[in-house]
Amino acid sequence: MKRTIAKTLFLVMTVFMLSTQVVADISVSIKFSAGEITIIQDWYRDYGNLTAAHGKGEKKSKGLPPGIAKNLARGKTLPPGIAKQNLPENLRSALPTPPAGYERIIVDGKVLLVDIATQVIHDMLEDVILR
Image (cartoon, rainbow, N blue to C red):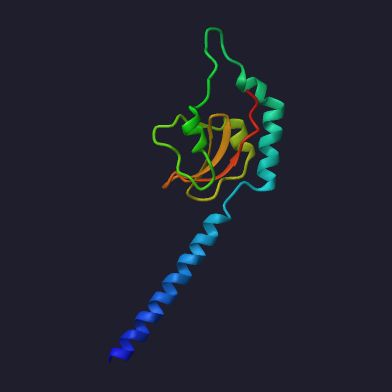
């Protein structure tokens, strides 16, 4: 009886460990595709100056404090309360739909691919948006 329980427990643990590994491997591979990067770069090259124009009396953003900016990295969680923007509508419509449960946002002039539930950054394009 004890031997059967031990074998069953071993089998359950093995299946759990293998399934956990598969989930981890899938999440690592979620990033911007080469096609998405090209669309985003081309859009900001062609239209970025229109979105970067500031109206009369508006102040240009100074960016994030260095400590918070350092935490904007792949695999890290977005800091709570951070100012984020959606991509411009015509850029969003030019891109394929992001993977289920993910969104593309702009934070501090960077385009991020973020897990909506955990707010973990999976990919980042840093030098796309001209300020």
